[in-house]
Image 1 (tube, rainbow, N blue to C red):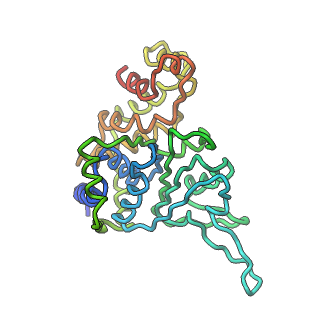
Image 2: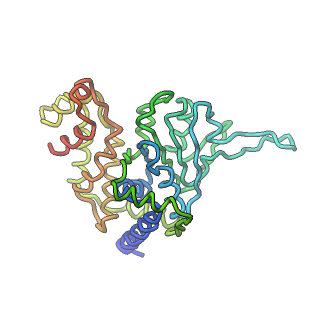
Length: 322
């Protein structure tokens, strides 16, 4: 099968996947699209939203529709690194045997990841970056495809451990999940207060996901699109010495900007976004479509932005406009 035929098949499968998820998830189209974009790009994502907005249900439904193994880890202050990666125990023959932890799954849901101390948060770092874990000096590969989807509660900050920038940078996307509309909430209540359940069918296999990830990586990117993505990421860096309006805006409102990984994710996200729209190559509009969710958690506002009440999203939109 040629790459163009594979991309056409991907578009069909993508729409089927959205239909299956729509049986359970009402509304949240933008969040579902972003979640699927991170999956087919091969990146991890952070889901941010208040309790009760079906973040866990969304991830669970996705795992069922993709036919992937799924583990949920509830992060708590007393969670230890070995509770995630696994540990060695002494068996009846007095030999050490490695017992795999919940990280050994295709999709790992790290629920309320900011509830656990940094030492335990760091246990996910190697798994997310290297797709392997090391226990007692031995390295164990994780089964591909592998995704970490973490949830975070933005309003209840007491007793939390904010993720350090180094770990935030490992997440490709920061997806904000908003309240449903009035009609969507009515549909949710009607569908969840009766004695019926919706069965979600498996749409694709792990092998198909890997083949779609591979063909998306092979998509050609025009030079102007690649240069635009790099310019956009670099425009978030303050005090660069450039006398452009974007540089002045970043210097005025930002204390820290996005690194090169953001440029990589902008291009990869644009490729996947283009593929989801049935295109064979990304353009600048595809870069702009993923820019906010790629950059949102990679830039840090300074005192002036907070004092003037300017959000990170507003700054990113202004940088795109300039």
